[in-house]
View 1 (tube, rainbow, N blue to C red):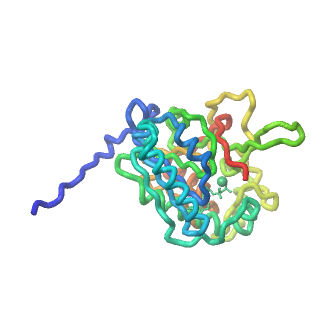
View 2 (cartoon, protein in one colour):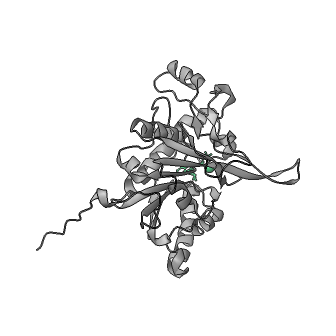
View 3 (spheres, rainbow, N blue to C red):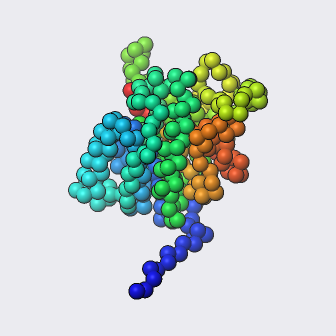
Length: 304
Ligand code: GDP
Ligand code: MN
């Protein structure tokens, strides 16, 4: 019998340009998912980047909650891919189930955000992101869009808008809509504090830490005085204003696939006293890729 054909990919021919649509570049959208939100899926369907160039990758924990989310996700996938309009259908979809247990059972927002729960939780999230990335990144992937399962609203042109900046790692600002009882109207507030610029205080704190200890953002008991992108949004600011970042969040993040191919991943351990997405930003920087953020370009997180 004839030996199987060898597939050749010349990575030089996989373009990563500010105009991915015109150049028909392949996008991989990666989502770690503990809960399924219909609003997330509806928003995904509204993305105007050609769906035939988009591969979706999901990883879900093997918990009761993860089982439910998998069922709900599969139902929407079947609807979109089999009976939905042709233009809505994605190129391919990959669902992974975690092969390790989440460190703690299902947690609501207040439990998740407790400081003593953060190191194990962030390490588990880092492993989930790495498993998802290393199992799905292909030789023809140009861009990876990290999009959390609870990001329920983005501009439909998200991919084109972020790619236009031609940056190795780029983060929009993640906000949250809420009902403001004072003004009796809908309002918005910053949500993701992991997009930041480093401070002398944080660097000084890191110098006195044990090698395995991590710095965390958004905790009064660990005031870092870092400049948070969440606080940099200006009502009259330019939509496409850029700021350099030293730490990034994973809620929404566009990464050139070459950054991941170079080896930048999500450290599930203290890396320069940083973990998960913030450790990823540091690793990208060490590889020579400077992350940037867009303070006035907003995406919205679900309000639990
Ligand atoms: P927060 O917004 O910073 O509080 O973080 P989340 O709890 O929303 O987690 C970030 C993303 O990871 C979301 O898309 C979650 O659905 C997902 N997620 C949370 N915990 C797990 C987990 O244990 N395993 C997997 N695969 N995904 C998770
Ligand atoms: Mn979230």
